[in-house]
Length: 488
Image (cartoon, rainbow, N blue to C red; front, side, top):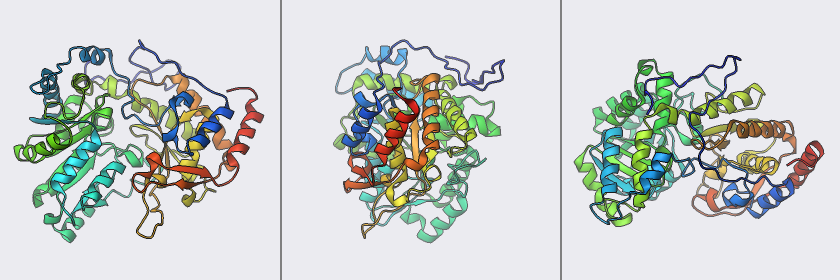
């Protein structure tokens, strides 16, 4: 493993700023780029929902980084030594040791993925009428907490929802709002304060350790627990090292220990943090461990596997150690920054500063003529797939909910997320995305809106089906053919 305090910045003599892959490709998977006619048919068959596309129709899958990160050779080889014992597995012992060293927590409970941890934490600590302050919600987090009677309060700073900002930590909690919320509702109604490392739905934006320390002080004043969603903690730690002066010369490993040390309870999706499937809940407090332990046994499995394959547990253990390696966790943010910067230079609205997980395009800025009630983020996701075969994810009103009267609760921002799983895409593929997004922006007036034709009541963005409000997809295809001829 490389020196953890060493910068990963590589300067080119040409003066260009190009992300450099600090890994080599040893296993490949064939991709297919189909003609636009097939892409349009696939989009229609999928109900204009990129979640419903088959991977046989997708060229570059930028839907998510959840479970799609490339594992290392060390992770794959570790899977071969898995101990299949139901109880007392040595695979769990190795996972426990890894989490303890990287996060500094004594107690670890595996779960099958991050939302399982959210379900268990919500059942264990939230009662009807409780309020939960947080920097921003995630879709499954919100669903689990509300099902258990909680009400979410997003107390972000004024910079959080600005598309372009020079604020390095748009994921911070507004501590004045936090104090006011505690005063209004009383500590008795606040089971915990939730911090999400690299806030997913507002562009993968990090919070600072300075902010986390202040949240911790306020929590201690009122006897409130701090819960950390650590799914993207590696990238958050990377941004702390890059953007927070106090930690410029601090290793990623030590930054992680500081962040986790400020938390009472930590949970994560290992689909993100360790490039494997699964997840975990961890803590240094035995009382908290005991409160969630029995729920893990009830809903997930025994405490040494928690619904996970022991092979994934072995890979998770190795992935935890790799999370402390700056060359590993910097790869995705560097590619995201490259694409976001290039798009911004071309006048295409993107979230700045670039964050974690993916490059986030501002769809209301990209498609100002599409009403928010016609789902501009979903429309742009569909349009981009049609002209490129690139599958992104809508992060806007389709990912929201309806109110008691059946009206859409309009999202704070309408984003198209182009995820960059770790160590998956090449620079030439990134340049292809840049080219197709640029062409689509030049022809953005052709893109229209969407409407629901089949709408699930819960988490509708996963399984819902939509349709175009006009024949705009056919017009977009005709313009593509006119400009690109027989090209794919």
